[in-house]
Length: 196
Length: 209
Image (tube, rainbow over the protein chains, first blue to last red):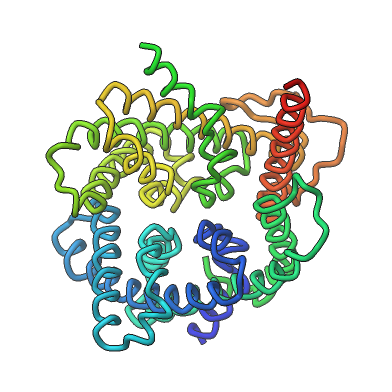
C-alpha cells in the first residue's frame, strides 16, 4: 500500500518539476528535443535510484551511529559526485551503446538538485531502505514524465509564431506553469495517501 | 579600484544571475512565495557565494587542475553547512519554510559557476567583490519575484514582520500566484518583459548610430 502511495506521489501529486521545483535547470535546458530529453531521463532514473540507496546506507550506517548528522550535506554531495563518476566508468566499460546514449548527460547530473533533493527527502521522511530506493525510482519517473511531456510540447512550440520577447526561456517557463496548473489537479487525489 | 567596482556591479544588473544568466532556477522558483523568504534565501546564498569565492580564490594555486570541481564542491558544502546550522539556531521559522532548499544551496549552479569561471582565475579582492555583487543581484531578483507573488497572491506585503498595506489592498488575492504555477508564470513574464526592454534599447541605439 505504501509503495502505491509513493509511486503516485512521485509521479503525479508531488511531481519533482511541477510541485517540488527540483531539477529545473536540466528540465528547461534539455527539453528542446525529445531525443535529449529521453537520454537525460534514463540517466536520471538510473542515478536517482542508486543515489537513494547509497545515501540511505551512508546516513543510517555511518552518519547516524557516529552522531555526524551535521555532515549530511557534505557527505551526500560527495557521494553523489563520486557515484556519478563511478557509474560513468562502469557504463562505459560494460555497455558502450548505453554509454553513447547517456554519456554527455551523466556529468550534468551532479548539479541536478533532484538527486541531492531525493537523498535528503528520503532521510527526512524516515523511509526504510526499500521505500527510499523505491521513492528515488518513482520520483525520477515523475521527473522523466514531466520532461518527456514537455519536450513533446516544446518541439511543436518551435514552429509556433511566438512574440520575439517571449522566445526561449519565457515560453518554456509559462508553458511549464500551465502544465504545473494541470498537475495541480492531482493534489486532492488520495488524500490519506498523501506523502509529505 | 575601478576594476573592483566593475566586478561588484556586474552581477547586479549586467550579468544578473537570474535574469541574464538564468541560473539556479530551483530555489529561485521554490522559495519565492513571499518577499521575506526571498530576502533570507538571497542572504544565505550571498554569504555562501562570497565566502566560497574567497576561499576558492585563495586556494586557486594550490588546488590541482584535475580535481578542482570536487574541491570547490567541498568548500561550498562547508559554508552551506554553516549557514544551515546558523539558520536553524537563529531563524528556526525561516529554516522550516525554506526547508530542503537550504542544504540544496550546494547544488545551486550560480555558486559553482562563479567558483569555476571567476574565483578560480582572479585575486581574492576581485573574487570577493564578484561574490557580493552576484549575491546581491540574486537577492534582488528573488525579492522581486517573491514580492510580486506575495503582492498578487495575498494582496499584501510583509516586510520584517510588518504588513506594509495594513488590512490589505482592495482586490481579491489570486491564490494561484503563491502556488507552484504562479512561480513559473511570474519568472516567465518577468524574463519576457526584460527581453522586450533589452530589444527596445538595442534597436533604439542602433537607429541612433
